Length: 428
Ligand SMILES: Nc1ncnc2c1ncn2[C@@H]1O[C@H](COP(=O)(O)OP(=O)(O)O)[C@@H](O)[C@H]1O
Ligand SMILES: O=C(O)[C@@H](O)C(=O)COP(=O)(O)O
Image (cartoon, rainbow, N blue to C red; front, side, top):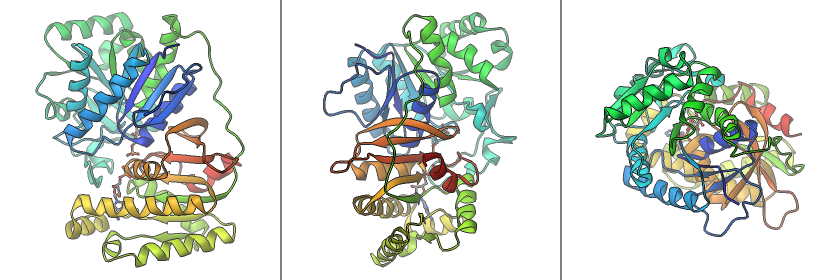
């Protein structure tokens, strides 16, 4: 038995986002954390998403990890490979989207791939190569203040050109409007001119469906989870998939509820504020400057969580802060150290509190989720019910416990304003 799609996601929330959309497209999908070290039973699996933490690490590391994932996915017989990055194209001039895409193309011996970040249901669209978040250009959407990958240019052709030595082209909406055959011809014409990376416009699901049809035969596609939802129909049309699978039901969850947030994105800041409005006693703020001074604040956070959990009330522990506060911490500590202090504190809280009975854990932020899930030692995730577009509940087996651990990994900018409350209602 071989899989149809093998995906490499550059962060953990992005991986669950893609897995969720593949499931919604009717595929049986398993998410694995890093390259599996043991053989997996993939008999009933159509797609595997390998979650990496390769978005913000040095480009060499991102390339090495992505190539290891590629090699494992090819061993599983994947017919098509998908490099999943953020729908807001999170990257820097050094990478990692360009270097990873180049390395994957080289390893596959392929000459061209498409770049399709759009996720229209969550407001991410691309027009004339420019990325919009809702009605704002990317560089005016809040993403210009991202702590690790500030996005200060919405022109993706220009952004990607700074990350690769190869030519970057554009397939715009006028081409897509002519349909899949015309789009395929356009891509071939660009390939003949040596254009290796093609940024693709997409305004809606119809555009994504045209792109999926035009690219189903490419060895490698890249982008956001919007394309992921459109591809399964094409795999069915190719005869590679013959069933439509309903999204799986997870086992009933049990245990206390905890939210850990290291995301400073606009949506998360509003979700933190909304939770605190509803439960003024329910939150504890971490500050990297205090964490740098020693263990005192971490111990206070732990004591706070224990108190809440004893009262059977959900606890929110967050480092999420507005750009001024983040900048001040980064100036004092350096960008990397500020982030690491937060990630370490939240991960250690997760490990201690899950071992003490937390059974429903919501983590906000991609890097943060990577740190927390890795510290928990989780290796596979089953995908369950969607809370909001791009964010499903997932489950991981938890040794010594009958019920698995229920885990929601929320991308920074995803989810409605009441997400931290409603997520647990969905689970109930
Ligand atoms: N108050 C803060 N000051 C500086 N850095 C922070 C602060 N809070 C969180 N961070 C760091 O910012 C980064 C946020 O990234 P991430 O978790 O991917 O969130 P998002 O999904 O919103 O991008 C993490 O590395 C986190 O540790
Ligand atoms: O494509 C997306 O927007 C998400 O799947 C994603 O990758 C978000 O990353 P974070 O905002 O860093 O969680």
